[in-house]
Amino acid sequence: MNFNFSSLGNTNFSSNAGSYLRPYDIYKVNLTKIERNELKGSKDPDAVYPVISIEFTEVGDSNRTYSENIFIPTTEQDMERQVLKNSNGHENEVPSRFENFQFTLMQIVEVLNPDGATKIKENAGKIKTIDQFIDLVIKALSGKNKVETKLKLVGRNSGGTVYAALPRACGLNKKGEIFPVNFIGENVFFTNYELTQQKAYQNAKPTNMDKEESKDTSDVDLDNIDL
Image (cartoon, rainbow, N blue to C red):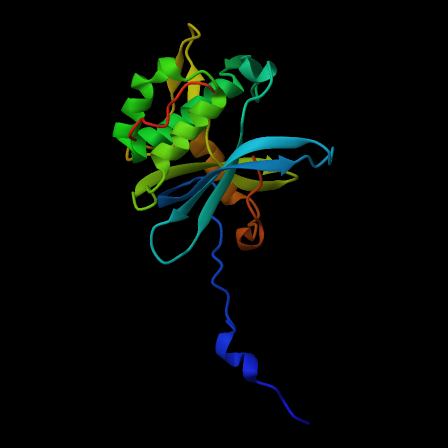
């Protein structure tokens, strides 16, 4: 029998794929991807949802990553603030999906490209569509993959498995005024509630996260803004 080993020269026999960052921890990371994308609906295969796909990679040799698809607000409901019940049955008003969308992206820009964030704010009156806003954010973050920062991840339970997730990027005080909640940058920490959730996660039956992929969740010329 003749054996053909000609493929040895151009075949990798070990995987270079990394694993995923776990919930309830703070990591040193780089932003390694940000782009517009589309997701097909799981229940309705004809439904298509526009998203911003982002990926952070842990600094070092681990190759561990965190990926998130941030849904782009498209409906009137996305503009409305929601009332949610907590575990004690108390109702709390939370920012709209649109508000959290803005705060999430702008917080990343402010940390990785402060000058770019300032210029976006200075030109806020010229932004007339969400597409223009997204284009400026992506432009501001392009080439910032070498900027190291800290990233806080919490957890999201899906089908009994806890996946890493970004915290809400903003909240509301008792007067209904919106305020930022840091999830990226040097000044990140866990709240008392998050520490309780972290403890519950750590004491739960271990899940092999290496095998679990994170799920999710104009006419005005702005091209000349130097970000």
